[in-house]
Length: 319
Length: 118
Image 1 (cartoon, each protein chain N blue to C red):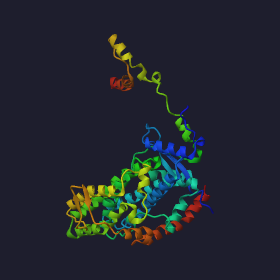
Image 2: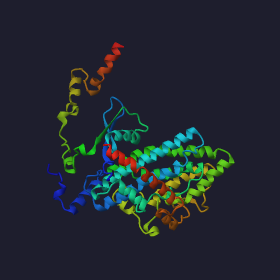
Image 3: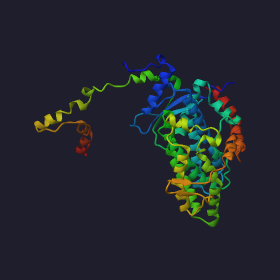
Image 4: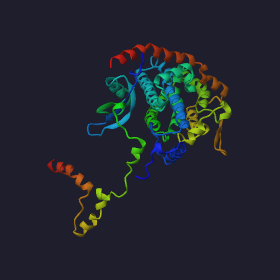
């Protein structure tokens, strides 16, 4: 067929043009397809960070498995923790296939995590001291994750889009699991209501930070323009944060809870939520592994990795 | 010792029910096919019904490359291969005061027979 394009006959510039045409036509790019380095490196950074955050994100929640208030709640939170580890596995596979031509593997991802080169999401550096925090993570942290992940369901990179489709379906369960915990506490005793309110106060700044700074002027770098250019996502960090406000603020307030930001309101004319900016310098410190629980959780992950080394070695030989 | 052998790539396929076609799920890393099978169930089958799981080592799969995939595009002149190319018969049969035995009608015969027997 005359219109078949043989990539080995094209210049780099022609390949790039063909690549852009494909993503503009809504075609999906697959792991073995030609892609510009900028696209590959952006995806590796985004997806390895997303994957490792799922795994690190299971750690604050798993603290609540032995302490869950009933058997039903224990089963629910165990299922959620297992899902998060499963999401991590899916996403690491996607990242690993992209890293393969660079000669990098899962072990490199783990090494990068331990050395601090690979960052994990700001929310998972925080403490979860009460059952209210366990519920709030499911309700609002997973809620925020759903907002940012559904924005990438049509990502130009096929394997990521397919992984997200599976992940988002399970996130719906996570959000409802969190809602169920919060609802029970919000309708409970004064002590229980206080527990939820304190969790909201504790998590509010981390939730604002969740979507990242509005532009590069805040933290020096921002990948959002590149991810939008390559059709990995469509909305900016600020648009996603505003979507989160629109979906969740009315629900938070309807339960009689308050937000720890007296300036927060919806500007009807401009159709935006006005809010107090979080401390972005603190954000930079947190993701540099200087958050309240960064070191503990990295240590836990590292210990598990080292202590299970013998299992990997034994099974390696048992082939 | 390198742990290269611990992280081998497997592709996972499964069937939702006995009559469903095999469907691609995702890939995973495992040291051998036995563990790949266990991990496939844990990773991908935590909720949905499943009646069978296959795992295949990725290195045993011959996939199409980008150029080969482009050659899969069909020319739009295959009406003679489909019922669409014979749709005019409906009008013809009407002329003979007969209904057309179309796909829907023909594929319903199995059920009809059962009803007659029952």
